[in-house]
Image (cartoon, rainbow, N blue to C red; front, side):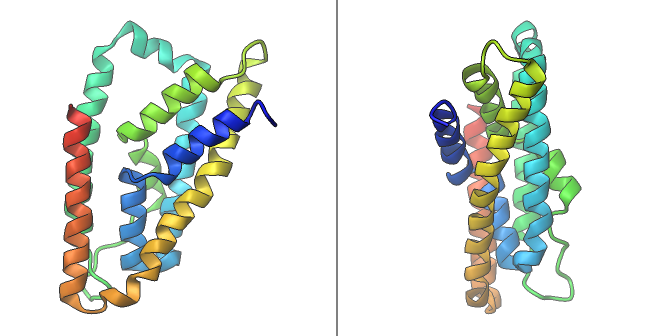
Length: 194
């Protein structure tokens, strides 16, 4: 357990701090409730699990051999954040024209473009992967640990959104909230391009 503590601490910091996933979850919770946010939570965890396994299994060596791929991912991820900001800023609570919540498959696929998810997966694979053990077993250990720590953090962000949902019944307040969350994603997109 003491060997897992640094990994768990890192996963907690990466999963609990603001980032694209958590902004998306807070906005989804606020606009669509807990039930609407559940597919996104599960999708994020599934995407991160697969991403971590792939990095631990050796995908990191591809990035070492072809460093330009990191730049391609950074640009693609930032462009997707701009799209997500546009989508989330147009959401509305309970309206007839309300867009759909982020789906499981969308949240899963987003991890392939989410720069913060890549940083987490690369760091977990390069710093916290147990040495001297079976690669698949070690990869499963760190991926499961990441999911066990990350899922509750995601739930907290979604519940934050749910908790302010009743405050957003006023369309003006809801619009301000959605535009603010969209602006945060735009700022993250710009920061990831640096």
